[in-house]
Length: 407
Image 1 (tube, rainbow, N blue to C red):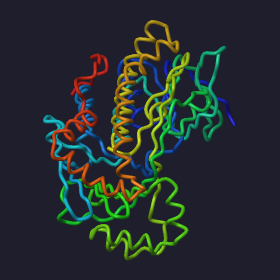
Image 2: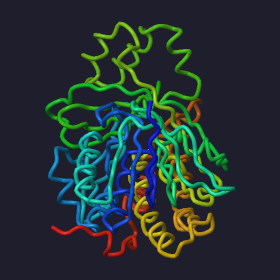
Image 3: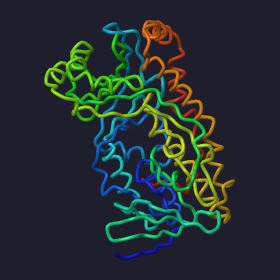
Image 4: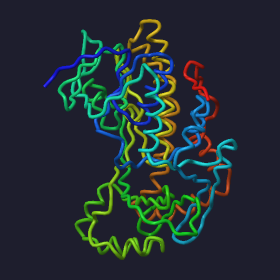
């Protein structure tokens, strides 16, 4: 087995949306970047495939929106809120962003491949698949790169800045001894996918029944992705009682679930995603920075995680570029990313927690109160105001022209 050594300006662990966007922007500015991706390709199952208007607004600023939207995707233009079969209210993405009045459902393998294709045309960008970070390099207290395991042997990357963009189970965070300031777990979303009825259109729906809350999303190209909001710890009990009671719950929840529910014989078609958010206390150490879910994991509520992570990546590109130019990659300098993102991330986490309390309600009182609250919110301008604040950028993110692509 060989031991290979490479030297780079920046080493990024994680080839997800945040890691690829950061690597692409830095390489566009001439920074020598390598992205280490632990999987051997992008072709796997993802849950975060909704790209909110704010994500597309960022792409517009670097002149990549039309490029990304040229790939296979579908648009979500409106949403509705239900209690049982009663439609309590609705909203339109027109009220969130006039310029981009929709969210984009794009399978993440397509998005990642599109970003990679754009990035790999840049001479200072490199991505290595099947490269799992196992150690961090140090000189004293300063991180100076990473050591990854590859099929050919160990790879030692010597880098001026090492970035953890490797998700909620970040190896860089664990290896670097980063501490979590807070963590909230609301429950579990139990996902399944069914064919989309012909009359469904491009509407997402949030529904509360006597049993559970449901998130129902149109999924490219012609499916619905359904998340059942199960209170914390209850999924184990559901499985212990066998498939029949849960099958009956789905049959009663919505006619679109009937064919799927009638065919159920076990729990194999379901995928569990823990509804968790957390916030790392300090995102930066000397020579090292966490971004995206590694630093500020958002819960699935609102489907805003990818958009928040990529916003952080765009801001990080500017901070890292200037830090490299000035020869200062200290924790204080790299920590400017957190200083610029702290307020919004904490605010979104709080709003997600409030929404989760209704969606994952475990007491009859809260379930009875939820439709009253939802009806009140949808009849005022509060819902639209909250959505604009979370799903759309309040203004342009400062992006230097060095990061902008040409047509």
